[in-house]
Every structure is written in structure tokens, then in C-alpha cells.
Length: 136
Image (tube, rainbow, N blue to C red; front, side, top):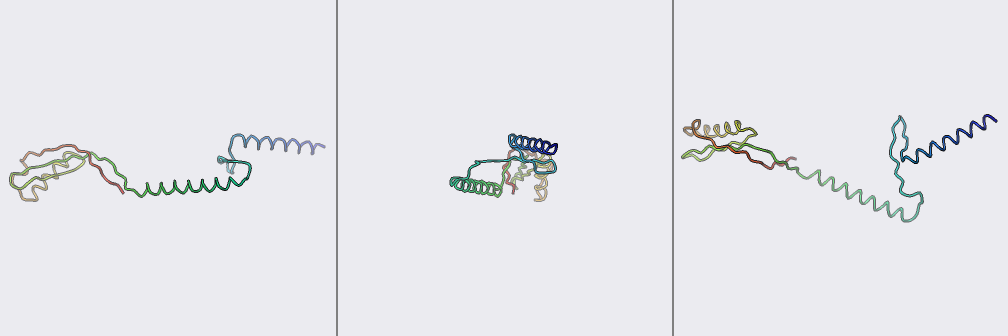
């Protein structure tokens, strides 16, 4: 008799425990982990197969969009310093870098490599520009 009462209590407790599991929408997987349970409909009807087919198509379309976005080159704006050194007879030498000092040095080095006179004493004009850079 005690065994029968104990089994009845155990069945009632597990039923209410399972019911509370259903109420909060989570399923225990094991090792203390749980996942969300998704129920669409408890009935199986002919419309359900159509809904599943449409959902699969929607997932496929979204997946293709993700692949397309991943394959497109990404662009970003980078702030650059551009310096120009104008010589009288040999044209303009331009240097670009992330800092003003590097850009000015690059312009002067290009001038000196071209064997132009007065590269170190000629005034260098610098400005900061935003440049669109493509990242793959």
C-alpha cells in the first residue's frame, strides 16, 4: 500500500514538474543545459506541410542574402593626411599617410628621389581628407 501511494505521489510530482517545464517553454537537454522549445501547432494537418515548405524557402532566401552580404567588399572611411610639395619646374610631389609628419616626409622623399633642388626648404601644404577604402 505504501508503495502504491509513493508511486502515485511520484507520478503526480513528475507530471506537475513536466507541466511546469512546458509552461516556461524550455526543454532540459542534459548537463544542466536547456534550450527553447518551439511549438507551432499541436495538430497535424495538410496546411502544416505547406507552412513548413514556405518557412524552408524563407530560410533559404535569408541564407542567400547573408552569403551575398558576406561576399560583397566592405568599405570604410579612413582619415588620411595628404601633403603636397610644389616645385617650380618638376611638378608636384604628393605624400599620403595616417599622420601629418609621415605624409610630409613621403612628399619630401619623392621630391628628393626625383633629384629636384630645394626639396628640404620648399614649403609643404598639408590637409586632412576622408578617403573611402575597400576591405576584402
